[in-house]
Length: 114
Length: 111
Image: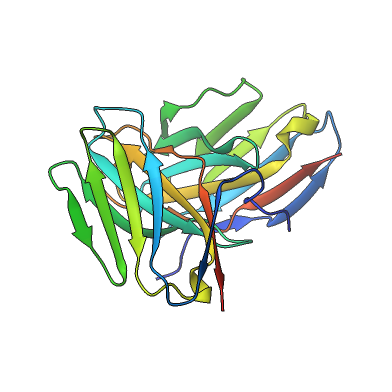
């Protein structure tokens, strides 16, 4: 069974630009969660999508948004990029979300904002 | 690539030693706890989990201990190997809530 895939793996953007990251969950998984990971703040939850609906949301500004498609693939978008948005963005999928089933992480997208 | 291990507490051990990584969790309502391992350049990988109705669970070379009285979780790795070198995170949650991750501990294993 293929794991969680994320594209692109690396990205360099300039302040003020916007970026879209993609996540393909494991087949059969309906929940996709996104996390931002930085050396200073660790792993911080962005949002979770389940059956195309945002079910949970972390404490991030509205510049961070996401969506989920009918095939469970998910995208996240960051608009008006700031230097502080440089981070590893991880997505994780699970069958139902929450703590009922195990979450599987993708390798992440390394975003650098210059 | 940039290490996720900057600014993290570090545990250095010799190959063959037993390692103990500790984690203090914050929410007394959490009923599910997980340990993840993250190697450089990779996403976190599930190691072992435990429910709040248990105080110990064993896997292959790993044991997780849960002390709900003091909200403390530990991961014991037996006969630590160089391949165990990574950042280890604990996470807590309940029901359909999202997981809350700890800051992580870097484990360095010397041959």
